Image (cartoon, one colour):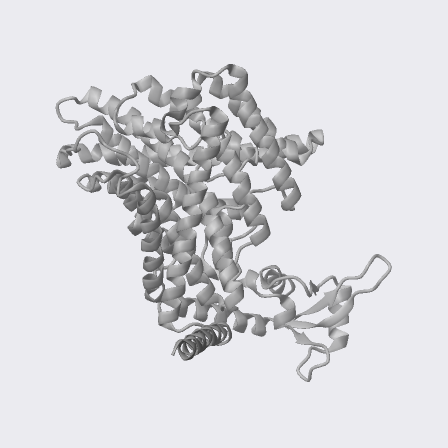
Length: 562
């Protein structure tokens, strides 16, 4: 009896393996069904959650090793007791290693982050750069571990996007499926980073996919919950920040103060974003003028951070200790103002020095300090009608972060989930709405979209602005040897007049030529060298370009409303 049972068991295992292989082949060739897609979303959620968890644990381990402390929640207090040369040497060494990694594995020495994920969702069918993304994750890990003054959410989001890209390539997923899987990975990463499942799901929809399509909601929620479970298995069901008392708001009297706070926070958010961009431009200018090797730029930034940290160690790392102190009202007015200004400077140095990291955690810290300073002043002027100063810190934290991310909905929910305080939602919502309304008019909607705009990636204006960049001229033109081709003699006349477009260009570059030249078609050429004449490929007709654009807009509208 034993041998027949073994044979049956072996046959059953082989049949199960064959069924799994067949299922995988069907999913890969035909695409997943809805149930299969939800299962894939769950797997991606678990993977992205584990990536976020190990990224956080890696920062804690390396930080505790480099700085010699077992309690990194009080890192700033511990650093104050170190020798000055230790405080300087650690970020310099970290910056040097980061510079070598980025110089070796990226073509521009730039860390990939949330902006690149948004670009991948809009222009690359939900794909991001894998090799450069992995190098960026390692660089950001070292930056945050060795004293860089940024946040961990940006690198974690891009790392999760790398995982979804690998799955998309294996599945040969189309654009809609690729974007949905990307949203799943982002939601899980944010949820696992902040123990915020609701905000994680809405962040993926609001910031990355930039729509709230029903078909994407279920898998993204599944992935977001999976990421949260990973976080809670490791750290328990606890909020990131603990507020001292339940806040109380005198609604009718105090709401005007929160309107003013929202405007102040909007301006502070713009200053933070502008400071980062100015520092990046200034660092590039110095690098070009002096011939400074690219790999030394992060090390110099690390030296500047270390010099500031000798007197103000609060700028080191993510800054949750200082943020908690602001939310609990444990800082006086001059400390809140000083730490806020120094954090803006430190974030600008870190990101301008191309060290890596995200902007969300710094914006939380700057916002909490701004709100606390505002609250201390407001409660001192109107002591009989004002609530707790910590309530202003909570509202300010949400207002600055929402303005920087350009995500008022998900940021408001993240603040609630980070603190567990749902009773003061009106104050936070009022401040958030005013801050985002003001800042979005002073930058291109958010830090990430402004960052992309500086790289000539025009996503802020919506699909009608960026979809043209997704079409190559060569894919829309009429070749010269087709029956409906443009007359060759007219094409050469236009070429001699300087009216032509390169075949490798996009419709974004070609469409303005129609208005300038007032022609119904434009010759498409390949430009040779100085002594070689251009080669005629065919012609791009304006009507064909408009048809392609109309199809793309229709497909985008169908995806966003499905």
